[in-house]
Image 1 (cartoon, helix red, strand yellow):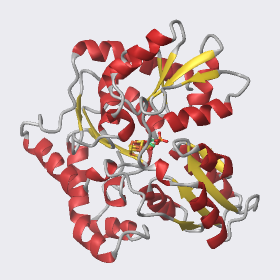
Image 2 (cartoon, helix red, strand yellow; image 1 turned 135 degrees about the vertical axis):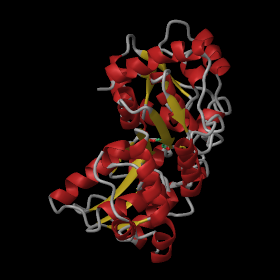
Image 3 (tube, helix red, strand yellow; image 1 turned 90 degrees about the vertical axis):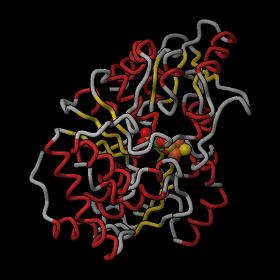
Length: 352
Ligand code: 13P
Ligand code: SF4
């Protein structure tokens, strides 16, 4: 772990985020420094999903930040004594399955996800019965007991890749209906994607908000015409199929970040709009000040937003003082851990 920055350095860095005001930096720099000190003292890893608001994102080092896939990979190889997951509960559960002997903590255990919350292990079993012998690929945005009933897990960074590697010409994909439709389009002629009927699967309540009319309006208002070499519209796989078709690039949150980094290094990006959670754009804008980002800050994931700097600080103080941590602990029944481990490990093997 690198040297802990001074309060002044933290303030300066916070001010590089266009969405963080001078007052925010002033108010929270000391708290962030204290979190970083406790982190070092107790050998804690703080995994930070790309959707974390800047104040929280600052508590994770570069290698501890990422998309669901990157963070699972990191969790699989960490030698930290305690894992604090700044993300939503299904992500922390995945880290727990991969580290059953470690303490895995989340600053707010009620941080859900409209995909994971609306699809159960029973729903997986029903689909398996309906399509016997067809492999089940479950999106990581699901709880461990639903994963335990599936053959392989995938994330938005590797769904197409893993589906192609599964046996047979059909794959059941759950629970995200819009993602499934996008995947079916991507894999047309290669794999048939079977997914839950309308009303029986789930949809991301954040990404469904972007309509094709919004994307067209963004193109017009911010002068991002289709095919422009330096102006881009990015979309996440969870968006509607017509939005993905219109986007210039689609991928996981980290794949979007990597594409931006690559274009910036070649001087090939001046304007961008990202059809995804708004804090992703806040974090990208701080990292790539050369790019003019447009953002839709009404599109925030209320579940991710539950992880605040104040709650994280309280949790870290409890670690430091040796308090009972059960309020934050992600615990799972042993048999669920055992069964869910296989499909998660299969993803780590096939998704590489
Ligand atoms: P990523 O795996 O692309 O980070 O996405 C997670 C998520 O919840 C998207 O809404
Ligand atoms: Fe779930 Fe959507 Fe929030 Fe991602 S953005 S955690 S998919 S509700």
